Length: 241
Image (cartoon, rainbow, N blue to C red; front, side, top):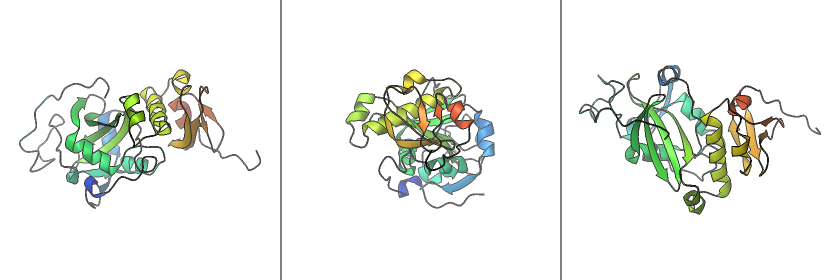
C-alpha cells in the first residue's frame, strides 16, 4: 500500500511559495474521500464542534487497532503517512502547506471534530491558520488526508517575515474559492493581487486589483468560482495569440 520514509519533522520547509502550499478543501463526505485515497509516503476552522471524547488510552500504543471515528487521533507525526491526494497538492505552486507545518499542527494544534471532514488539527502561525485533516480508523496506521491554509489575522500575516502581500492574498483567494465552490465571488477576488500564479485543477491563476475574476496564465480563461475552474480543461494558447 504505502511506503514509510520518515516523519514530517524530518524535512525542513523551503520558502513559502514552493512547498508550503495550501491544500484545497472539499465538501465530499469524509468517509468516501478517505476510502478513495491510497496511502503514499509517510510523514517524519469554521463551525467545528468540540471533541466528543477525550483521548483514548490505546492511542499511544496501537494507533488504529480497535479505534472508532470518535477516538481522538494520535499526536505523533512520525506515525502518519500521506495520502496520494495530499502528496499531489504538495507538488502544486501556491499551496502553503508543507510536511513541517503538518508536523507542527499535529503536535501543537487545536484538535476539533468536523462533521464533514472528521478530525482536524488547526494551528495559527504568523497570522495564517494551518488546517490538517487526518484519519486513523479505516487504515492500518494514521494518514494525513488533506490540509489547507486560511487567513486568521490579515494584519499579523502582513507583518510576519515569512509572508509577503502576494502570499497573503493568494491564501485569501484560494480559501474564498473553496468555501463555496459553486458560488461566484467577484467581490472577494477584486481587492486581491496575485502575481505569482497558483494552481487549481489544470489552471495557473492570477489576478490584479479591481478584476472580479482570476485569470489562467496558460489559456487566458477567466473564472469567478472554483466550480468554473475545475469544470473546464486548460487549453494553452498557441504562440502569438
